Length: 435
Ligand SMILES: *[C@@H]1O[C@H](CO)[C@@H](O)[C@H](O)[C@H]1NC(C)=O
Ligand SMILES: *[C@@H]1O[C@H](CO)[C@@H](O)[C@H](O)[C@H]1NC(C)=O
Ligand SMILES: *[C@@H]1O[C@H](CO)[C@@H](O)[C@H](O)[C@H]1NC(C)=O
Ligand SMILES: *[C@@H]1O[C@H](CO)[C@@H](O)[C@H](O)[C@H]1NC(C)=O
Ligand SMILES: *[C@@H]1O[C@H](CO)[C@@H](O)[C@H](O)[C@H]1NC(C)=O
View 1 (cartoon, helix red, strand yellow):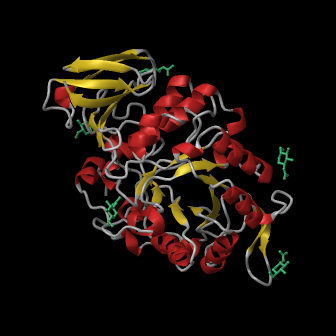
View 2: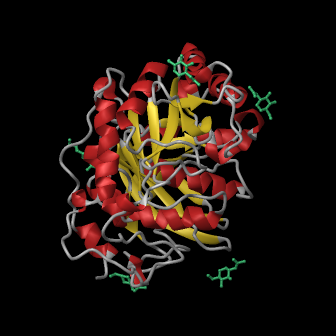
């Protein structure tokens, strides 16, 4: 069976019951920092506290960045405490344990996150939580954890799904996001809440909900088992694709995949296109800002993944863009921006190199409409936003416009706005009242 993305986009069936938490936790996309994209397995308390202090010092906390998340490799390998069955924090990396660092992060007015996997081992081979959901959720709560990223590594053969799911990516996709080479596809209409993946992820949800501490639940099942249809009732966000990388190919690939998932975005539930790579690899200035802008307008969790003590002023300014953060954190409008035109390609074309280039969405915080134009080409090219084509703007001929990168007021703009964009750059416009 072939799964057609355009059909999936039409079948708007998000699950009705969200994972609603106390104090609004998980209602809006999470804002924070995670150690993996910056340091991989080479993590310790010094690096975590440096990040936490920089979030405060650089003014990121004032903008709402609040989670400081420890990714893989925080524990002792191949063992659990023989008395308590708990995972043992590695005190050579975290001398005061995980509860000690949680206290220090909390003293800064920030929250702290931890990592595990819905398998027997994490992706780097450390103890993980399958079969130990209650024990681990209890330990996380007791240590003062506020956020759990739950990965999909170390799954034993008796916990594998009966059927394979279609998660189109550059290496496997057919035309328009189909998976023609899938070896064991599910029958039409298969209910993925019957899958073992669903069971593995709901077991940890239930264990977290049984704690008196509120722990945001971030599913990292790489889009498997059609998670978009059950993520809302299971977690506060769910990874909809394979891992990001610090290069434009991966960013463009995931932006393309996620552009077809925008009907699944809402309060309490957010498809997660993976953590930010702003400041990493060899991304150009244009690619860094287009990446951040796309993630922000898709209402993705915005989890910074770079070393904050060495970040450049330009990259910091991108992460601090107030218009994009305000759009992402809108307390009244839950929907994301949506593509209104693909641009380089005919509408609804699945293309990893040329994702949808024209996006718009309403914003209560910006008191207007956000419009984004992307140049997906590898040469400089012009993109034009024509008000008549933008669903939110088609009723008037002229609008007041602000350029979200410079903050410059572009005045009363009639009919359309054109921007010459370098390769992989994005123009972001805040379109205010008609004029
Ligand atoms: C999740 O469910 C809530 C209702 O509980 C709804 O408001 C929201 O739009 C849903 N989100 C998604 C992504 O389906
Ligand atoms: C195992 O847990 C017990 C009880 O909390 C504790 O006394 C002991 O130090 C722990 N052992 C290790 C290796 O962490
Ligand atoms: C963490 O790693 C850094 C860099 O290798 C090192 O300078 C620091 O002392 C380490 N901290 C701990 C607690 O191991
Ligand atoms: C994908 O679908 C769209 C709309 O149905 C169509 O215009 C486009 O040509 C298709 N692309 C491919 C590569 O089949
Ligand atoms: C630029 O894009 C064109 C058209 O998609 C492609 O043929 C070419 O290989 C690309 N060049 C580079 C350097 O990526």
